[in-house]
Image (cartoon, rainbow, N blue to C red; front, side):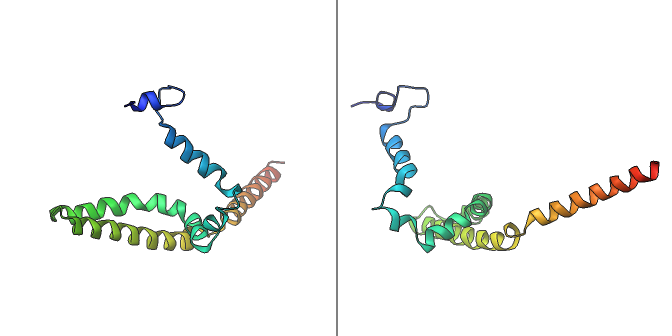
Length: 130
C-alpha cells in the first residue's frame, strides 16, 4: 500500500494525492462540459454563488456560537445532526440577509461622492491661495 507522499504529484512538499488533483481539474473544467452544465447552471447554484462571500464571513460565527450552546449536550449523533442543520440554516439565512442589506449597496456611488467632495475641497482651497 502506498502512502500519500508516494501517491502525490509530483512528489512535492504539499503531498496532494491524485484524487485531489482530479477533483480540482473537474471543478476547473466543469463549466465547459455540456453534460455537467445543468448541474451548475440552475437557480440554487447561482443563489449559493451570489451569497458565497457572506457565507464565508458568517459561518465561523455560527459554528462557534452553536458549539458553545451544544457543548453541554451528549455526543450522541442526533445532537450533532441538530448542530449541523442549525449551522447550515442559520448560516444561509444570515448570509442571504447580509447579501441583500450590505453587499447590494452600490459602493461606487459612495466613493464617487467622496472623490467629488475631495476634488471640490482642494479646488476651492487652491483658488483661495491665489
